[in-house]
Length: 313
Image 1 (cartoon, rainbow, N blue to C red):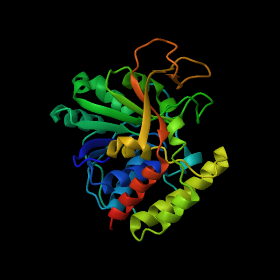
Image 2 (image 1 turned 90 degrees about the vertical axis):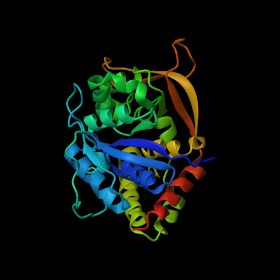
Image 3 (image 1 turned 30 degrees about the vertical axis):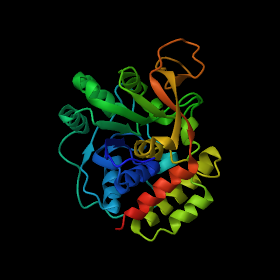
């Protein structure tokens, strides 16, 4: 059941096709108060992901502030994903240049400021490499006790960028290690869950029937995303990974979770970026993550489609 209390979130993203839909879901659902969008290098360079976030905000008709964040991982060389998202990070739809710009405040500083002002009523929803979040934690450790929850998209019991590692974690595993070892409550939307969030033909048909700019935009996004996921991974339908984190914040019953131990591999020759998920409790280490295992596909897409309909622009 959804409640009537708005959940305050900061959406940390790297748009990205599925990031774009996550922004629209957050903007179009009345139970979410999107207090800010922060961007980071990931699917594309940070200048591109920031511009993409601004474009999506204009489609959503929201004036939520956008803060540009880190351009590089903590330690490693930057890696992007043009094979999946195109050179712009959000290829497919042809959109005009955004009319507004990001704020002058760096994303890391905004995260710190907003959390320090909060009464543990703000959740972080990073659906990108965790560089901004780790940097904020390092710069101001006092924010740790101020975070209601971190609901992140990343990792899994298998990889999609290497055999062992999912893209968001692989791009900056050192940052992920900081976050996962922070002691903050974490709910993790890994590939085990997000590969259930498939934009099937029936879903795409329903979205195509939405008579507004947001519906048309998402239809075009999914067509491009469907083709790249088919070409690169052989998927018939594309998974909208990042949307799962926002959907969980709206209605946790969309996802079933299991409390487990997750550790981040930063030293392995073949396993760098792996999330070591202790599903069976073999390490006897204290669980630190609510690990998402099952998605209510119908409820999930109903949330997304209703949010798109709510965006009347």
